Image (cartoon, rainbow, N blue to C red; front, side, top):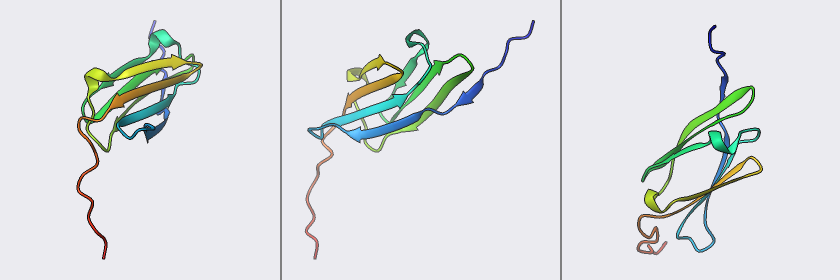
Length: 100
């Protein structure tokens, strides 16, 4: 018997700086997915997420605007929302350039 192929869906993602501007807070909407099916791979420049729901599967990769420290990433899954916090690799605040 052939395995049923599930439709692939790109999850909705919200990427923002955290309150003290030292890292990202990332929210990934995985409505209908089971916590046990969620997979997160974090690199210095982006992340990939996969999860299974009843009728489809979530799957996508995203590029981040700033490099991060993936080994310090934390993830929490609650009520269909995956929340990831990860610090920047280095400060994103450089030299202020005066505007003429």
